[in-house]
Image (cartoon, rainbow, N blue to C red):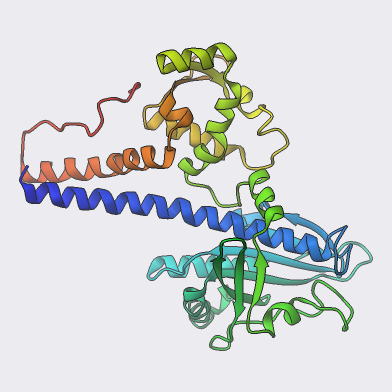
Length: 367
């Protein structure tokens, strides 16, 4: 391999590592944003709310509607009022742009059923995007409305640009409503409250220049207790936030001693044993998040699955890197190399070379 080839390969590897880490960071920010909104709703309108208590009935983070619709959250208020929330950092170009617009429009076409003796709730869709993407989101929805009227939005869609602002002591999400090409709606009225002298979402968010949603200790605690949203997380995120801490809890004192002296142990565990550790007890999130992370560990060679066992068992080759190391640093490089390896093989096959492919890693314990 020439020096130029090595340099190109190094640049591709760095770009792939950056892409993987950005995806993890975007998911972390989305979880923090939803947690901050939930905490803000509860602070103002929850059972013990400081402003108008008892208005918030529920805040659901893992709703599954018909046709596979999975909004990031659904908040229900006593008014009656329902707010369906979706977080998207950006609105891409091409087919991805239309796909995202169709998803948001599908949320707005959902018909809510009123409870017996009650009026049909007001219903809005809240679309949260990066401040630099609110124009693109409005434009995509407007194009959908023109090109496919039968798929166009029905319920109001409120687009808010958001940005995380960080200071040494305080962190918060700054949200801003802007008028976009006639597409961006105000919140329905009434929404969270039903008295004209009370501050509703329009008075708090739409009419001011911007509004701050605090990312405070209460929101961070909520993020720790519910570290997911209704989108599938990157497996490495689940490993770092949930699975590896759970394995750490399951280590016995003897295993810790062995790990400290020899630097490596094997752990044989079933799925049920892993998910019943105190760390995960009572947490609500889809089962597939943990299973995907387990499959990822098998893929990168840090575990294997004995499917013949009843129930199936996962055998983890635990070392100090896995339990105490920087997983993001270790596994993003490994994942990036795994992504790029097939590309290298295809390029060599097209070139007609007969040279054997040398794997990137030779220290993985299982294959």
